[in-house]
Image (cartoon, rainbow, N blue to C red):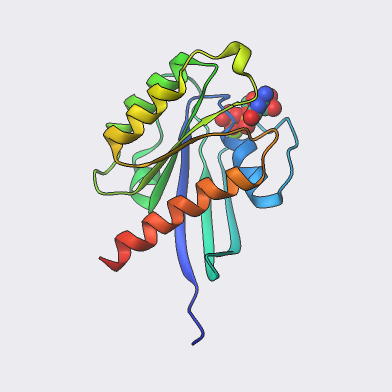
Length: 170
Ligand code: GDP
Ligand code: MG
């Protein structure tokens, strides 16, 4: 049986400089470029197999201008799922995630990632804190490194996709 293409809209949310663009570009291109446009919000379409099924991702790489800037309401209602990103080296970015979470529609699937896992010497947020928050949100969680890992970055997007597709089947 030939399965039809599922469309999954993902908004990548998080404080400035946590690595939202690095993660997004890593997923889309398998590459790490290191420096990205810090001004622009970017939107991408990317077709890929998830568990053998074709999925068309639409990804909105949001771009808050400051720690106090939260994403536009329309992005929040546009998305089928949210990738919440903080940096393990930045306590304020962890707090940003908690603030943004309060703005999200309650029934929309989430995944939580702690980026910059390579920078353990600058760690400000423990792994356990991430795990506890994810438990509270009832969502998937991983620490990862956009700078070094391809497969774990893809896994985060795939896991969110699975959540979205499961929610749709119910
Ligand atoms: P955004 O503002 O959330 O989109 O963040 P960017 O993707 O522009 O990344 C901000 C900065 O963090 C850039 O200098 C990236 O090179 C750097 N960066 C992103 N991901 C990682 C990572 O996993 N490890 C390290 N060490 N640096 C990262
Ligand atoms: Mg960016």
